[in-house]
Amino acid sequence: MNERMRWAAYASIGAGVLHGTAVGLHADHPTLSRVFLMMTLAQVVWGVVALSMTNWSVLAVGSVVNAVAVGGWIMTRTTGVSFVSGLEIAERPQPADTICATLALVSLMAIVWAYVRRDAPTHSLHMINAAYFCIAVSLVAAWTVTGHAHSHGELPTVDGGLTVDANGVIISPSASSVPPVDDTVASSSVSSPSAGTTPATPTKKKATSTTIAPTTTVHSHVTTSDQAKAAASGWPRAYDPAVPINLSGIQGFTPEQGARALALVENAKRDLPTYALYQSAINAGYVSIGDGSSGFEHLIKYSLLNDGRFLDTTAPESLVYKVVGTTKTLVSAMFIASTGTASNDITLTSYAGGLIQWHTHNNLCWKYVNGVPKVAGVLDAAGNCPAGSALQTGGAPMVHVWITPHACGPFAALEGQGAGVADEPDSVRVDKCNAAH
Image 1: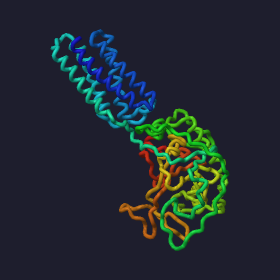
Image 2 (image 1 turned 180 degrees about the vertical axis):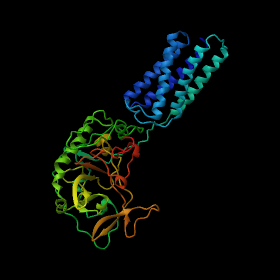
Image 3 (image 1 turned 135 degrees about the vertical axis):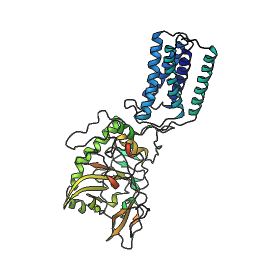
Image 4 (image 1 turned 90 degrees about the vertical axis):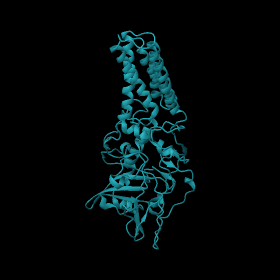
């Protein structure tokens, strides 16, 4: 049995070495790095011991260690491991991790083989071949990760130089020099007909000193998105403005990011009722985009779109009213970033971590009606807009903040076309109700 255990020992050592190469690749997830380090030590140390000791306790320990390695690999490729940061979302198998799991499986099978066939003699040459085989396989697997950026599918962030002031308002670098803008279609470049529009009177906002926005660490390789972590841990949760938001057990955000998200909701609940009456919004310079037939009507104040400030609950770029017959009830604000802001800008993505999902619209068609921009529809299957309308271009990132109950949380997007598109796939978007939630 001692000779047969060499198969198990060599395979376990090889798997441990591969786990060791993963420690550095996952340095941005301390818990995950420690898990890999523990597996490295357990598999290598056990393999060394098994080369000279073959009693029942050694067999049992080796079985458990390598069974855990195989089971862990299966979970990370099928369901993810919610309680280990960096493994929350299932990933596609990669050559190195697949070979590592295979070696662990070979070790586990060899232990059983050695125990069952302990009376059968084996040739020492076979054991030498086993050593060469495990060494070669381990070296090949280790080679596949050299120079490789471990990817979970998130786009690298960009830094647009945005800042966050003491009130949680995001401000662009040139905010102080940005003049009021003419009425243009939802931060887009749609050609205006001969009938122009009159620029809306800008609302004066209180000035506050700005501070650099706290940001998450940007690594040389991409990592699992905060939205994916939040989605895997159960976010979004149903929202009721009359009940405190419960973030217990939710991952993908720091305490500071969580506090900022909660403050944004509270500020919206405090400030948005100024426009509870539909006519109050009209009187303040907001104009409808003509989408009331969808059940929700958006009003936009175009002078606020490119003023260099957003997430300002005292002056939201857009107000959303629920339409039931002739009744229009204010339900949320839609905050819209300045034109040209990237949806993966580091200040946006680090504002509230995985609690907020930024989305854009790239298929809306607009036209002017009596000098006012209105939504005319969406692109058809052939990529064409309805006659007399033009496609919105340069759409900016946006997010809804609700002041009425919503099953998909306080930052939920509208359903269907209203949800827009995001950097993350729908399965991990935290502004939609889907199967993952």
